[in-house]
Image (cartoon, rainbow, N blue to C red; front, side, top):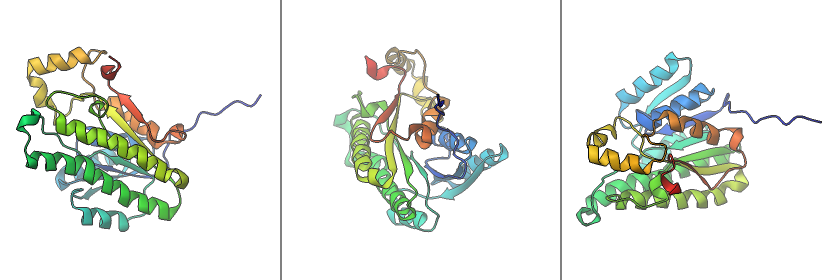
Length: 254
C-alpha cells in the first residue's frame, strides 16, 4: 500500500510580503515565513522599524528585505507591486483600532479604521493578485482578521464592522480567484499581547473581562499565530479557501 505523504510546510523558493510587519503580529508572521524558507518582504510606514525587523530575520539565517510603504497611499501600493516580481504569499496585516462607545465615534474615527482595515486591505490584495495572475503561478492571500469579525464586542463597533467586512471580502475574493489557483483565507485571533495592545491590559478590570472569555485562560501571543500563518501559506492548506482560522482560545465557542 502506498503511504500518503504529508504536504510540506516548507516555502523554499517562494516570495512573501507582509504588511504592518515592523512589530507584533506582522513581524511574527514575517519571521514564520522566513523560517520556512520564503524570501520575505516586510512592509510598513516606519523605515527604521522594519529595517531592524528584516535585519533580525537575516541575522537568524532568513531571507528578508524591508520596504517602506504607506498602504493607505493606493498609488504607491500599485507602484510597489508593479515594480517587483509577483509574490506567492500575501499577509494582509496592517490595521488599527479606535475603541470607544458607538455614540462617541466620529467621522474621522470611522475613516481611520475602515480606510486602513478594509479599503487598504482590499487594494493591497488587488494589486498583489494582479501580479500573481499575470505570473500564472497561483498563491495564497492571508488576511489578518479578528475574533471580532465573528462576534460583537463592547466599544468595538468600528473594529467589528471592518473585520466582519474583511471576512466577506475574503470569501468573495476566494470565489473570484479559485480558477487562477489563488486562495484567500483569514486568521481570526483573540486578544494578542503586543507592544500596541500591552497598555490596554494594564487596566485590571479590562484584562479580567478578556480572560473570562478566553477559555484557555490566557492572552494570546504572537507565537500562537505563527503556525496558522505558515499553514495557510503552504501546501498543507492547498484545499482551503474562503474560510477563517479562528485562533481565539475558545472565545467564540461560548
